[in-house]
Structure formats: structure tokens, C-alpha cells
Figure 1: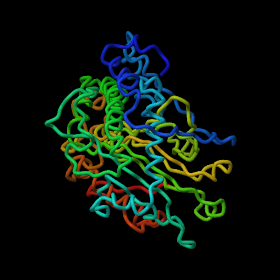
Figure 2 (figure 1 turned 180 degrees about the vertical axis):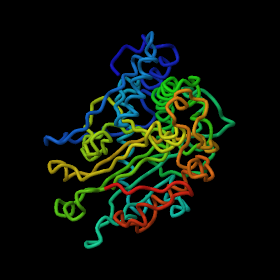
Figure 3 (figure 1 turned 135 degrees about the vertical axis):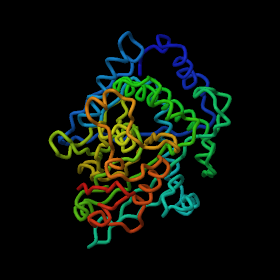
Figure 4 (figure 1 turned 180 degrees about the horizontal axis):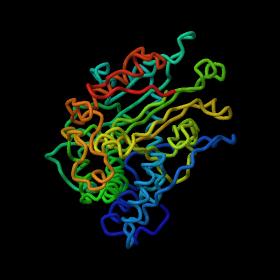
Length: 410
């Protein structure tokens, strides 16, 4: 992230200038965001590899990174990405916007709860307390979510770096935001577009190369300007007391997989994210790394590759004792294929054919294979079940759609 942008190709140079010249000074001021100190505890950290995108445009770089990526995806499924060409200041400002949103009174935030939340709608504000963490005490989750859908108007197709045609996250979605979001919406949109061009597009190209597909195979079904359920998320985990953490088993969110393609998670110094290491079948902490994104593979990629790429299991634990006195604010981006993409296993990949990954769960069971839209709202409806208790096996192992049953993860 500290390299000279003049050494990058012209298209990337323009993005760098958009963040570092056009948007400075930013239209709206924000007080700086302060990160809490990292834990001093010696936790059992996961051994994750780091993909360096500065190699992407070097001779042989794509081939090298494609091999690196597929090994990471088929190994632990979580990895770091560095040198992704988005300045730290832009990231810090997104955290500051999230902080400002969560400082709003609850009555104000509740105005933006989506209609149909119980039926799987998720864009807007999702209040805390929908899930029971401990039956004896009645303690519920303290997770608040604000989701902003990506722009997706087919009639406004334009470069992801154009400063003149910002669709402001409103393409195919009727969506109202509080003032703190509205006054920064162009900046948020620009940030999300850069995540596509600087991180997701390269990852999708590398995955296509690894599967011996045309380079544009995955980018063609993950275009920013086509209707999808992509969204940016500000996510707040409210703190519990040490006594409460013991009551809930030191677990804020049970093991689960994400439903899309890739999830991007920006550095969060409050240690809480854990992955289930598929190599040792143990829970490991994910260490925050400076100037990186944490990336994991999700359900849609697993379906599209017949299980060759696994959807990675993760959870949120209570932080170590020296961080239990603070809330945890997260900044995430969820990438999903276009809504009309049918989640059939890709037949055109010689790799999947050679390795025998030719059917996903739906196909193996003879069930109808859903579109991304149908899959998204079915799983979201399950995830948003009001009053759900994670240890209830009828909930944790529910059939999401015919052909796919959830699994219970501690």
C-alpha cells in the first residue's frame, strides 16, 4: 500500500488519484477514528498466508498468484490480502462513518429496519437481540448491523472509477439512509467500487485462471452495475461483562459459513474472529494484521465449484480479557454473484472435471438448483430467525432449501 502509484498501470493510477486527490479534501469532515490497542495475550493464532496483489501486474504474476490463491482456498479458506491500492485514510474514514452511525439514538436507527426482516430482507438496520445466547439468563446477542446495498442499475453502467456518475447505492433498491450515511454516500459508493476493481476483480480473475477458465468468467457474474445482493456492512458487537461472557460460554456468535462468494473484512484490533481450521479441526484466532484485508470463501463459490472451494467455517468469540471492556466495530464487504445466476456446478472447468468435482449438494440430491437470489433470501430468513437459540438442533440443522441442510458448528 506504500508503493509509488505511478508504477501501476493507468487504470489503477486513476483510482489512486481519486482517493488521494479528487476526494481530498473530502466533501464532509469526520473526526478521526481511534483503534483500540491489540491484545497482549498469547492466543492460539491461525497460520494464515498473505496474498500480495502488488505481483498481479508483474510478468508471470497472475499465474503465480492463481496457484497461491487456490492453495489458500483449499487449505484453510481464510487468507490475508495486502497491497490492494486503497489508502489507509479511506479505510479509517469508513470506520468513522460506522462509529457515527452507531452513536445515533436507538429510536433513530430503528427507523431504518427493513420491511420483511423476518422474511430475509437485510438491507438497512438490523437491531441487536434477535438471537438467544443463554437460556438460563435470557442473555441475547448484542450485534447491530447496518447493510448498504451496492448500486445495481443496469441503465447506469459506467467505469467503477468515474467521478461523474455515482449511482449512490440506489440502483435497483429503494433504500433510505439516516443523514450520517446520506451525507457520505458518494464516498461510500466510491469505496465499494474500489473494493471491486482493486480486490474482488483480481481475486475472481485469479480463481478463473486456477480453474483453467477464461479470465473474465467470474468477473462477468460479479459486475458491480448488475443487480446482486452485494453490500457494505458496518457491524457493531456490544460488549458483555466478564460474568456475562462466562454465562454465554465466551461465544458471541456461533460457527457459520457466509452465503456469497468472498467476504472482505478490514483489520479489527479487537480479537474475536475465530476460524475452524479444517486441517486440525480446531478453532483458531485470526490475528489482526496491519494494512491487510482478511478474506474468506463462501457458500456460492462452493456451489459453483462443486465443493472444490470450501465455504469456510468461522465464529465470533468473546475477546481476551484485556479487550472485554470495549465494543467491537467491524467493516465488511460481502460479494455475491448476480441475482439471476443459477448455482449449478461449473461444467466448463477442466480442473473440476479432472478432480471429480462435478456436482454440488443440490445436484447430488436431484433438487432444483436455486438462483443466487433465491438462495440468499432463504438463508437470510433462516439467519434472521427471531428468538433463535443456537443450541437448538432443529434450528442449527434446518433445511434451508430442498437439497441443502445446515450443519451445527460450536
